[in-house]
Image 1 (spheres, helix red, strand yellow):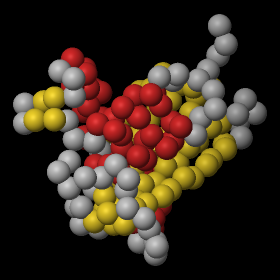
Image 2 (cartoon, helix red, strand yellow; image 1 turned 90 degrees about the vertical axis):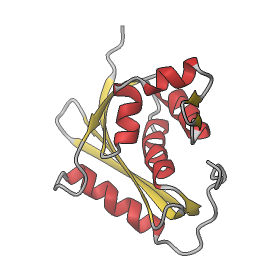
Image 3 (cartoon, one colour; image 1 turned 180 degrees about the vertical axis):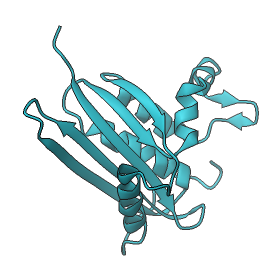
Image 4 (cartoon, helix red, strand yellow; image 1 turned 30 degrees about the vertical axis):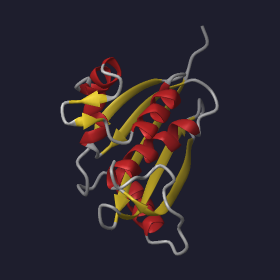
Length: 163
C-alpha cells in the first residue's frame, strides 16, 4: 500500500457581524522527505455570511486543495467543527437526515461538501485555542480577517438568513 503524504492544515473563519462580511484562511504545510517545509496559503471571503460558514469553508478549502489521498492533521479554533466529529454530532445528523433537536442542521451544504472533501483522506481533528499564540492559527486568523475586509466581495451563495 502506498504511504500517504502527511499534511498539516490550519484553518480559521471570521465574520464582521454574524451575519456580515466574512472570510476564511487556510494554511497547508508539508515537509518533504528531505526535511524541507512547503507551505501554501488560501483565503477568500463574502459580503454576507456567518462565522460558522467561514470556519467550515476554511477546512473545506484546505482539503480540496490536496491532489492525492493524505494523512491530515487539521487544526482549528472552531469547536463547532471539531465537536461535530469528535463528539459524533455528524453521525447523528446523518442518521436523522440532517435534522437535530432544534430543527434542521444549519449549513448542510457545507457539511456535505466537507464530508466529500474528507473522503479520500485520513483526517484527525485538533482544537487549538484561538488568539493564544499558535503560529498556524494566528496566520489563518490574519488571512481570514483580511479576506473579510476586502472590497468588492460577493454574497455567499449558500448563505440564507433562515440558516
